[in-house]
Structure formats: C-alpha cells, structure tokens
Image (cartoon, rainbow, N blue to C red; front, side, top):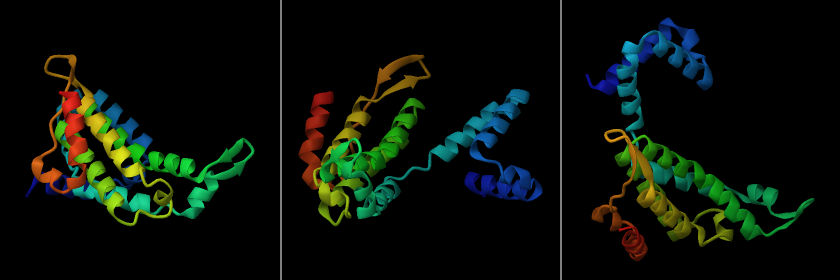
Length: 208
C-alpha cells in the first residue's frame, strides 16, 4: 500500500472512531494539533512528513483548470456590483473588471509565495506554471463576462506570476539565510504557450 493509501485508510478508521475530530473547524483542528505536538514532541517529525506529503500534491494542469473555471464563472452580476455609480463615485467597468480578476488570481499567487517560503520550490513552480497556462488559455478563448472588459489581464497576470517566481526569496533552512532562487520554465511547458515565449525570455534575462 502506498503512503497516501495508508494515510487515507488511517484517517477513515480514526474518523469512524472519533467523530468529534471530524467535525472540528479548521482553526480548532489547528489548535488540537499544536497542543498534541506540544505534549508529544516526538511526533513533530512525523507530522512534518505528513504535512510535506499533503503539500506536495500540486499539479500545474489542475491549477490551470481551476483558474480558468473561476475566471469564467465571473458573470455580469459580479461586475455590476462593483462597476457603475456608487456613493464614493463612478467606477469604470474595465477598472472594476481588473480589480475582480486580480482578487480572483491573488490566492494562487499567495499560495505560490507560501510554498517558496516553505522551501517547496518544485510545488511553487507547479503553481506558477498553472497560473501561466491558465491565463494563456483564457487569452486564447472565451474568458467569461468579466474578462471581456479586461482582455489585457491574462498576460499581465502571467507576467506577475513569473516575477514572483523568479524573484521569490525563500528561507534556506540549510544555511539559515535568505537567498534568491529561480529556475527557467521547462522547454516542453513553454511549447504549450508559444506566443508568450518572448515575454518569458525577457523576464528570465532581466532576472539573471
């Protein structure tokens, strides 16, 4: 049985035996974990390994699909709630659309930064690739009601993701100091976004 299968099997058994744990809210579960590790420090290494395993599940294709779905799900109701006349003034539809799209993509960028800070560079790169690919597909096809008001958003969002990746500082646990880290996007991946290769090359050149 794989490590993932063992974890799932154990979780299912423990969930059946301890239904209270299954009903905890995220912050409550986090508090339980902290107290458990404080009481049993010998479990810290095992908990770290499980956390690392769970975090190492990122795949760029899934990230790209999630971004596409979230952007395309933004409709005129969302746009109209932000655009138009308000008590604080008038908001252009294009400005509102851009703000909404930035807010939609921001959680993915924050997640990539978090992975970089944790030293999980391979997983951070997967998120970066997913962001870039998802934005590329949105720029090539139907992106939904909101994106129609901000057609220049996908390449700018992709550029921002690449900037975060190439300049992302992470904590080097081996030396205990801040260092810059970056790695070029694989050539086979770049072949999936041919029209943006010049942009990628410029950013890479600027960061070398």
